[in-house]
Structure formats: C-alpha cells, structure tokens
Image 1 (cartoon, rainbow, N blue to C red):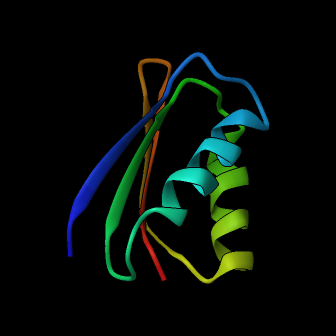
Image 2: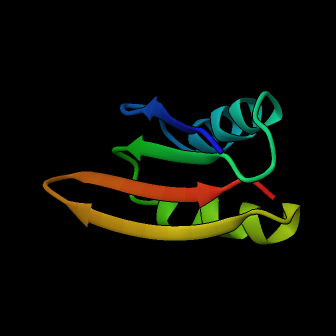
Length: 74
C-alpha cells in the first residue's frame, strides 16, 4: 500500500472527479489517495464516483475553503 496526494485546487466540477479518476487508473488496489480541492461539490461527487467504481471513502473533511477526500483504491 502506498499513499498519494492529488492537488485539484481551483478546479471546478467535473474536473476534480476526472483528475481523481485519471490518478486512480495509475494506482494499485489498497493504495490511499488524498484529493485536495476547493470546489465544495467534491464532497458529494467523489464519494458517489467511489461507490460506482468500487473504491472506499476513508475520510472527508472541510475547512477554510478546502475540501479533502481520502479514498482507498478498490
């Protein structure tokens, strides 16, 4: 298992989800990806994408205009 961070700040929907999808394609099952965003829509969009694609959301957090989603690649 490895950990990775994706900077999706200043990107608006649907780009954070698209960038997350592109990054996950290069990862292995069990890898952890932390996605850092400024678009509040990711708090619903990325978890929905994870459910559809078999990945698990480990954590979400929001504060100071930043939104973070931590997921485990399935």
